[in-house]
Length: 434
Image (cartoon, rainbow, N blue to C red; front, side, top):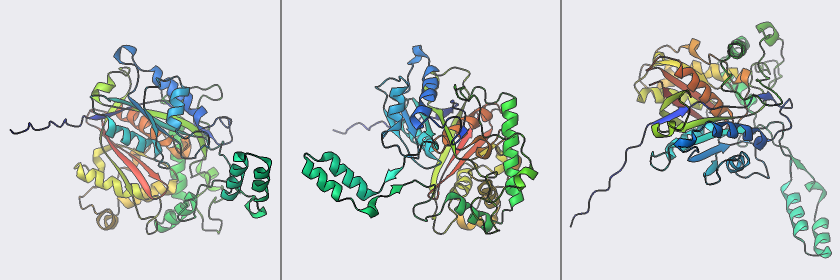
């Protein structure tokens, strides 16, 4: 007797809905006393408070992340959910992917939604660059563990006498790639030189970022995206009074040989903050307030490049043309470009690569004619150079910001949201206003 064929349900459309974030503050500033968990709690509380009780007022899962580890919090997502008073029956997992952390978390959540048992996910992340824990050398940690586990004075004395002077070292985390031993700034200096990105070009991108961010704050664009905390009510890194002249006087931060072009002014600052975004099916959207901006996540890509034979932060330049080609789109078809500004030089390098026929054909392996890149459509309300860059939070920040911007555009409009990440990786999303 023949068995009936098993029915496979079609994957539902996935939507992103704008979330909220804390103000972003420069490390060592007004949020310096809060760790990643402290920063996450008010954001998670505010997101949960949006849900309609009659429609099942809880998300079906939560994904959260931070790049810098905390020895007392192994699963930041779970701790943030519980500390925020969320339903403890909600599964919560943590993701880490450098600067792409909460964007990769959104993609992971998208793959877990099925419109049957799971239709709404709370996604985000946080980073406290002010509260970085300093570790001990591994041998000293081993000796101290043996001391704590000792059952008598003799064993404790043996553990203490085993400590060697050379083991009395502290481990201070650095913002460097482990495999190359170079900082992000050092890698981007190489990128700027290789793609011939001038200091002036970088400063102009930074200036535009600050001006756009300041104007957006002034006209209230961020009012429903940013929470007001007791310590601060708006981003502290935006410089509305900066100018090309002021930026030009800053000294290079990473290459002081006389050839360096990256400065504190055209690089994203070390930042504290947390951010969230909703990931949902059409069914999940019904639990959110009707006025919440939402757009469809049409396609996305997580990619990696050979960091030993390509500039470290170039991954999105490979992913973007592939994403457009397989969706039969050109640059001009995309009305909004949100490109993470880890460094102004990195943004300029990506744009230059996207307009280079040899790069597209030989390296990205895209033969479709993509046309002119619309530089004027990039980061209309400011980017990470001005707004700040808490590693684990940037993905949710840039997605929520992009969702709100695209939602205000005509039906049928497209957006690209792109983030480069340490390790030679990147994440890119293709969004549509239906």
